[in-house]
Amino acid sequence: MKYYSTNHQAPEADLQKAVVKGLAEDRGLYMPEEIHKLPKAFFDDMPTMRFQDIAYNVASAFFGEDVDLDGLQDLVNDTLQFDCPIVKVKENIYSLELFHGPTLAFKDVGARFMARLLQYFLRNGRGGTATHSTVNVLVATSGDTGSAVANGFLGVEGIHVYVLYPKGKVSPIQECQFTTLGKNITAIEVDGVFDDCQALVKAAFMDEELNRHMMLTSANSINVARFLPQAFYYFNAVARLREKLNMNSEQAAAAIVMCVPSGNFGNICAALFGHQMGLPVKRFIAANNANDIFYNYLQTGRYEPKPSKQTLANAMDVGDPSNFARIIDLYSESGQLSAEETYKRITSLISGATYSDEQIKETMRECYKETGYILDPHGACGYRALEEQLQPGEIGIFCETAHPAKFKEKVDDILGIDVEIPERLAAFMKGEKQSVPMTKDFADFKAYLLKQ
Ligand SMILES: *Cc1c(COP(=O)(O)O)cnc(C)c1O
Image (tube, rainbow, N blue to C red; front, side, top):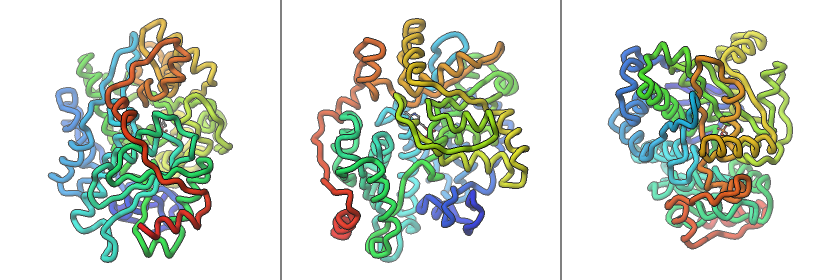
């Protein structure tokens, strides 16, 4: 499969290049040249199929030309070692729980898949170069991305991960998820803010001497290997709902509303790619916190990025969502349709919502009181959007993108409860913290890397 850039000014790439480079030369995002529709037989059989088998079918459509089929089956099985179940919260509203992975958030799926795909290319002699046998992943994090990437890549041969995080600015729970791992994961504690970490990573990618010394790559959510695998659990969610409610594909396509709490829009983008492949879903809702850029686009047709605002649902604090470019490319037929026509297509399929911190708190309290279900602040946006927008005859599924224990202090405080910490999170907290102190001066960071 070839991948083109959403800016159309860069040469096409094969999968390996798209994964190793992440971003195209013209700063655009890579898009697969084709999105294959899956066959009717697959949709007929879906409710009786296992998650791994459903995911394998989806994965083959994207990666089947570039990864041999046995290898792909292993990749999928290795990624999906945990379930993404749907849980009924109340009449017609289901939670798609994406938090049963190692770091309790949905990013585990894409991070793990990307790690395994890179490893596959390395093993087949196609990842590194003649001079470099190790691939070095640099990732700047304000909390969640670092832990998902570190855990996804933990123990993967041939890859070393450097997680840069701002000293004193991530929660203790988040910090222990990437500082206690050891092995091929190095945590770098930067005396600065998240933007300083981001700047160090960007400067490293641009530095010629450093790039000669070592092979560098990124693992952020714009990478095709991180966002496309997220389509797996949308197919599985529809399959499980159809199984539960004994629905055929047509009934599902007429009833199911998929609601995704969104920040950088990678997760909903994967759902929309699934829809292009034939996933029977009637419509989508993108639920935002107070960062309402996409919501405003849906109201006005104008995309106006803003500086991000800090909210309770902080993993969605994004003022210029990267994957917006992919959504536009998808519905404009790669730039062939006018902005107006594209806007019409998008608004006929996707609606928006935006909630303040006050509304998030109120929703968490009301849902807990009415149903006993504990929402985290991100999932709360999704749940509320369904409550407000679901029409008669529709059935809603919202993504619960993180386990409430991941935001324990906030959730305990808002609900007046003591959220139980799952065993695997508690295990991280017992580990010994190890990190390399670093200034925000690039010369220091570069000198450190040149010694590795
Ligand atoms: C990353 C994240 C989101 C936002 O997902 P996008 O793909 O960036 O839209 C939502 N909730 C949680 C808990 C996250 O970690």
